[in-house]
Picture 1 (cartoon, rainbow, N blue to C red):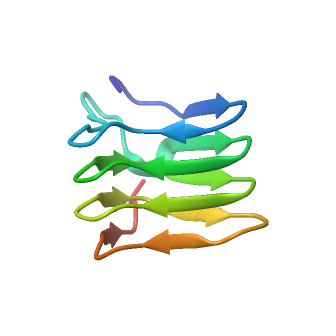
Picture 2 (cartoon, rainbow, N blue to C red; picture 1 turned 30 degrees about the horizontal axis):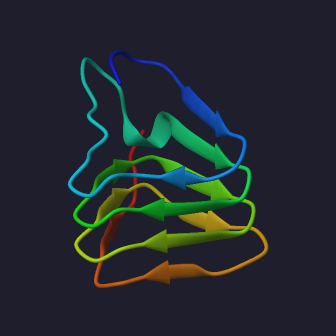
Length: 91
């Protein structure tokens, strides 16, 4: 993500990241201004470096080795973590 501003991603059903993937911030983009609205569930693949707040309707699974700079919310189900590093996002 490139530049200062608010980024809102709306995914109608599921969000799944590949293993070893990452969200990269550049030129003033901050994790506190990145939001992922997920219509069902989110799964972050192994060793992913993820940025932003996930707001999933059903559930979130954060797999082994994945780090999140932001927040992870599930409205009707569980948030499942597996030895992860979660850091609060700054603005």
